[in-house]
Amino acid sequence: MAEYRLTTPISGEEARALRVGDVVYVSGVIVTARDQAHRRALELARKGEEIPVDLEGGVVYHCGPIVREEGGEWRIYGFGPTTSARMEDLEAEFIERFGVRMVVGKGGMFQKTTEALRRFGAVYAQHPGGVSALAVASVRRVVAVHWLDLGVPEAMWVVEVDEFGPLTVTIDSTGRNLYQEVLEEARRRAERLALG
Amino acid sequence: MVEEGIYRAIRRAAIRLPSDVQKALEDALERETSPMARSILEAILRNLRAAEEGGLPICQDTGTPTFYVELGEGFPLKAGVREAILSAVRRATEEVPLRPNAVNPWTNENSGDNTGRGVPIIHWDVVEGDGLRVRYLAKGGGSENVSALYMLSPSRGIAGIERAVIDAALRAGPKPCPPVIVGVGVGGGADAALKVAKRATMRPLGTKSPDSTVAELEERLLEEINSLGMGPMGLGGRTYALGVHVEWLHRHPASLPVGVSMICWAARRALVEFRPDGSYEILEP
Picture 1 (spheres, rainbow over the protein chains, first blue to last red):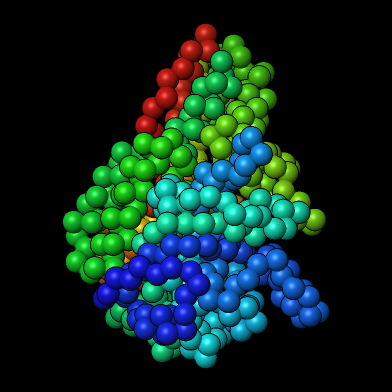
Picture 2 (picture 1 turned 60 degrees about the vertical axis):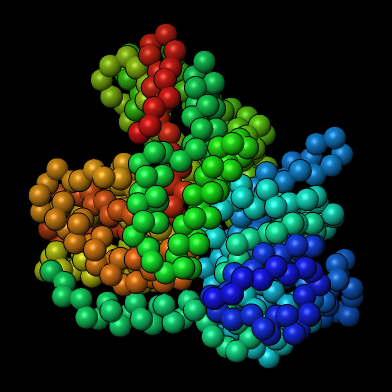
């Protein structure tokens, strides 16, 4: 279990060095996207159109923040992760098309994403669920927002952060998926319980 | 005045966790030995301090605002309670701020102020007396999404109930942001079992069912669920559940409904009690 401090953009070499259990703090620019933003980005890319952000070496964060406009500037009041499972159908293509090196969320992802992370040399990291105020403390500023028509939580927020974390690597580029391992063990243990 | 009291209860719940939950999280950290589980719990506890010091919501998912109202028959301001709840929610959304979480399922339009058809959720109970008690619950989507209903054959008995709750925990895995509080509702009908299960997640940690059979089941289920080893955030460890609370209702002879509801570690709740003149006090429920 090693601890890393990474700055965006993250290189393929940096991402491939990460292993399940490592703790990472990220500085630089990260981009939020929930299912609606994933869907829109992929629709544009499939038509050969540009998306408004460069995600090469980027960190995509599954997050619907609390944001308020104050004096012409956006201020973030809540910045914890949302459930990543909702993006499972979209993430593999998202990683492949945009060159994302780190997907951050909570609750883990499944086979298709695990395979894409392995193929393209990227990782999935868990931000502790609900740990929102601490994440706000790592926010330097909102750089930009795209697709506000999707609603505040679903829009794509481009955010500059300083030591964003702790992020725990839970799916790495070797194909290890910690959630899967923990759940398989839990199912084995459940079978051995004497109930009633 | 009723609006002000409810607004303050919402704000307090969003920013400060009840002390029983906070204590349970501290105890969990003492039990855990795995570095990953410890790192998660330490971040959660640091987050609680950051929220309170900064006056920030604990979690960005400030939930679907849910109220359990005990309205005294003689409460002089009873005609205005519903309006007071709605305006307190709108004001809290703007001022705390809360995340707007009311979405039209057909158009995906967000109403922007946490009100809409059926939102906030308000459960009304008319009780004796001339006061008003309003309990507020802020529950996020992640833990609401793992709610489960089992319509068992009554012959399955207590073992069947136990198996259903274990199954719900295995299916939930990392999704509801564990450590969770597990609420179980036995009996009633399908809707009543789930309603009672959710209400059970609001019972303070450390309290036991007054029925000894049920209290034993609560204790056994807590041990069993934690023995699965899923731990905080489902990354492995000793604490998946902080508590298991079982509530029950009489059942139909042909039915044994078991509702399971979980709430994430950010089990945000507050209670505000109004006196007949509208003055109030905010309490830890």
